[in-house]
Length: 265
Image 1: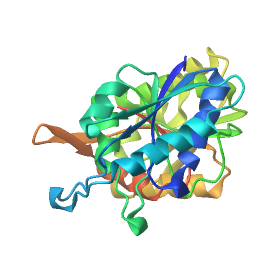
Image 2: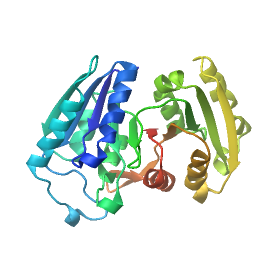
Image 3: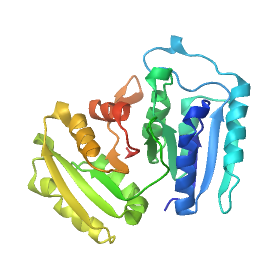
């Protein structure tokens, strides 16, 4: 059940669609929405701490003002928080919410949310939605595509996404065929399909062969070919110096996705 949502607010007003997208989710589930922004920028490029730049506190206050004005609508419960801290602070806060929402990085405008997304995904213990920087619409649930490979991470993501799957008009299991998914039940999606059916969710199963190195491209191509409103997938990563970093497929999808991605780890 989705009743409590945390949103990372964007300083740049041109990226306020993430705010409106989050508000539409809150309205869909009658949930409370908390918009959070840090006094100092959290978007530290993952490759170098030297690239850190500090946004002014005035810009943070401006983002809060825009959020509070936009949240003045009937039936929507919302609050804003201006806090000191960095990416780890957001992930720690997210542990006390049902869902966190962060916008995709935008390299063309020097906006890097990678560390923030990594922290929320791997350190919060809660699901995350990454909203693409090209997003134009608020939440739609006509068609949801769930990536399935039989793994623990994929199972966690699908389970966490059940509130969205129940409201979708169509749900698809998309399986990339390779050595990892060679088991017959995985390829057919038999057991996970039965499980979802017991939740009154009917699924279609689509498969496509691809090498391990091409998994991200196969998923992105499949999503681009159809009118997908939400992509559900496990967030894969590995430990590096006591911190998690994205696996190749996860990183590839998050950098190039044009649809919102619901992720769990």
